[in-house]
View 1 (tube, rainbow, N blue to C red):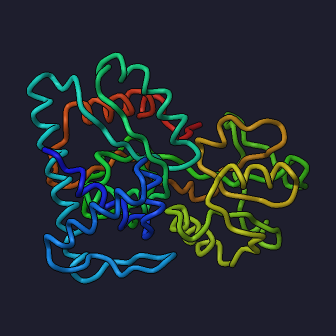
View 2: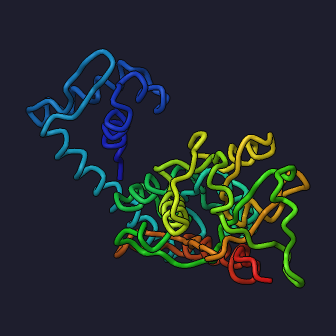
Length: 309
């Protein structure tokens, strides 16, 4: 099934710019424009409102793009089903990960997966959870690995891999760093209200962690003094190391922290879930199923990220 023309038009819509789309497709702008004009002549109507810097869809274009995405989804699903008939040893698998931990998790699993499916080409993508959820819902990703709360879930499928605790983290030089854990515990528990006048650097409102942060500070009864918000946990770590702020971080980042940091349980021990997600009702290929199972083996309850004392 030759769907190159559909892929070309989808890329123009994605980039909102024919020049950028041509660069991403590794073809000339002239060749891409000819394909678009040919299609518009065939349909008898333009698909894009054109400008020098921004192309956006006409009403006809919106109809075309909506159905084009469905055509591409059906193509992928058809190929996956047929590949599974031949033991699933070839094909493509698009996998979404959150920035930060995602690529490290991918590299831990990829070697084993490649041995099982040496002819399956994996296309990893990084993004914030809400973007990855959208890609799952429209068929742009086969599977994605996401950290979220029940409140952040969509109608698609979420398979739990592990439950993860969030920790309060302060610089090692902070006066409260001397609070000692009780006997038998690795981490002390600290009431966050003792830091209500301290600056915080937190994950931004686009992150699913924002749901957890709102709950934590609401339960504590104060609004934090936010130095700034970021989309990257490593930025929070750098700022704490520089003695500029406090922060709240998942155990994935806490477990390997050095002497520059002091980490605490919060009294309520807040947790969220690390999950594998895929579109409800969509065919899940054998390689996709295998990749999820490998992630569970590597990162699941056997090596749980929910710290217990």
